[in-house]
Length: 152
Length: 112
Image (cartoon, rainbow over all chains, first blue to last red; front, top):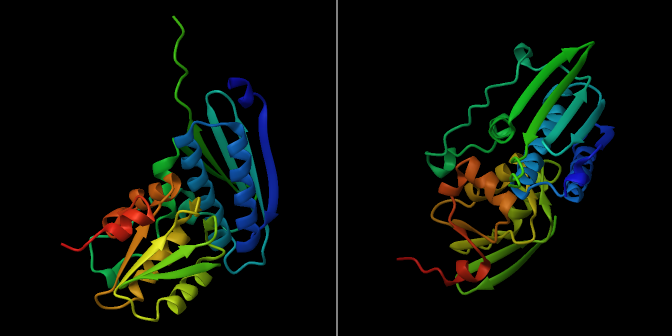
């Protein structure tokens, strides 16, 4: 199983539209499945990747002509790193948003219908790094795998 | 987005015939839900057993679908796959909806 992770790379780019992002996310989810990641980490990565890509489409490129999004993945026995690069607007304050979710302890009519993206990304990834460099956003998300059982 | 509808007594069952509900289809999903829920059944069950993945926009569309039902009508959820259930749990929306393992469980449920 460990050999599946060796030198494993993923690299694709796509236009920052909802439909292209949907197709790309589905393709990445499919590629992750073939890696044989631990099931819970696989699910965590699927959710966080989708939210991070949706943020780029909905916020970084909001009001701009659709640009390109590049998504790279690197996996080895220790974990998975996902990098998302775009040339849209920077994150406000050049930092990863806190992502404090709206409360659901309210009447049905007042339930939040959004605002969960960064909250879930922060909850599900083990490390997050954001850089703004040469007009480009570069977000890295890490998902570590449990250490293999030691053989006595 | 395909939804298939069946009626079991007072309960309407809406099955999502898609493997994902994401940002690209959230608005259409909400509109389709508005159309199919107009007949006024007091209880609705959304069968999500075919849905492997949902993002926060898809979650928002399900929340919006319940909000647009109006007074006294309930939307229950059945057949959540692990990743879908995780999204509901993380956002605490699992405390807002009644979740059932599968459609049979949801149909067997009787109000106290």
